[in-house]
Each structure stands twice: as C-alpha cells, then as structure tokens.
Image (cartoon, rainbow over all chains, first blue to last red; front, side):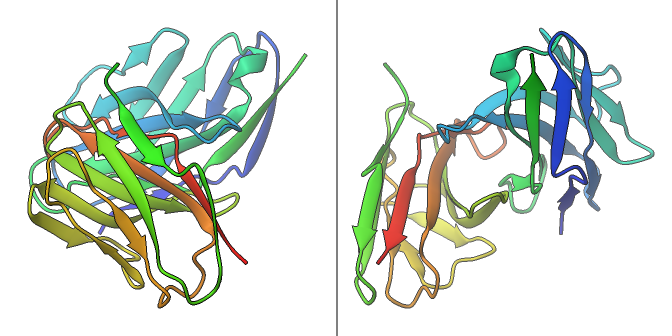
Length: 116
Length: 113
C-alpha cells in the first residue's frame, strides 16, 4: 500500500518570496512516480510537476521545482517568486509505475495563501 | 478541443435516490478514474478502469457502481447504499495505465438533501 503525508494544513507566504510545501511518502514499490497538483477554489486539478523514482535530477517546471530526497522518502514542492494567483490547495500524489494499482494516491493537501 | 467533460456540474438528490454522474473524454485515453473529495481533504479513489469492459474497485467503492462500455465514457452511479454521498466527484484519465499524469475534468458537486 502507498501513503502520502502532507503535514502542513495551511501555509502563508509573502508575494515574491519562495515557499516549500512538504510531502513524505511510503511505498514498497521500486519504481514509482511523484506528482504535485494545484487546486484553485474553482475545483479543477492542475498538474504542476512530475518526478520519477529513478530520475537523478530534481524536476523543474518554470517557478516550480521538486526537491526529491529518495532516502528520506520526501518530495517537497518549491515555488519560487510567489504570486497572488498561487493561492490554492496543493496536493502531493504518487503511483507505482510497473505493477499493481496504477492509480494516484493523494495526500490531504496544503492550503497556500499568498499575501500582498 | 480535447478534454474531459463531467456533467452535471451541480446535482441535488433526495435520500434514497440513485444518481449517475457522467464522464466523457475525447482524448483517446485508455485509463479512466473516479475520485471523491470531501471538504478540506484529499482525493480518494472510488473506481478505475484500465481498458474498456474492465474496471477495478478503489479504496471507497462501497455504495458506488461504474461501467466502461465505451472507451470514451466512464459513468459513476451513486446508489442509495452510499451513506454519505455529499461530496465533490472528479473524473480523470491517462493515455495508458503506465502514463503518470492524470488529466482531470472540472468535477461534479453532489448534495444530498
């Protein structure tokens, strides 16, 4: 079974500053993928970034980067230069890539509020 | 434009009634998924289908049923056996079961009166 833990129910950050959203995971799979999604108040789920368990470099997508520490089983999301539009719920998720149930397992989320 | 369409966006139902949520995709994706989201919480998997005419239970399948008769369609029925059906329901798809990123619909919000 897979488990995702997001320990920060809510976070505040000043506009233009960087913020790190924590995510730890537990799995017995050797090959897996880690994902981050953003959910604005409208409810849609927006894919942000992906990291494979065998990827040696941390993933980056524009202002988003994933700080992947495999030994510690953590996959923290870093948002640089926060914008007011970044205010939303953020979910960490994972799935096995080789076998078993290939559906995403989600964490409970972190609500980020960007302050002007 | 390609995407996932969920309908209705808002739905009200009386206790004891079954209701079916529609999910249609024109992305030619093999795998489709249904998730439930309760206020302030993460998404929980209800059912998923990796191929037409096949589907698997997720973590909270009790009180729900699905069908996958066509590749593009994966309707979810919330039956009267579901004890707490009021929630936000999200449908998603991936090109193949091995592809990571899920593409989501805009969701259906079900309220039981």
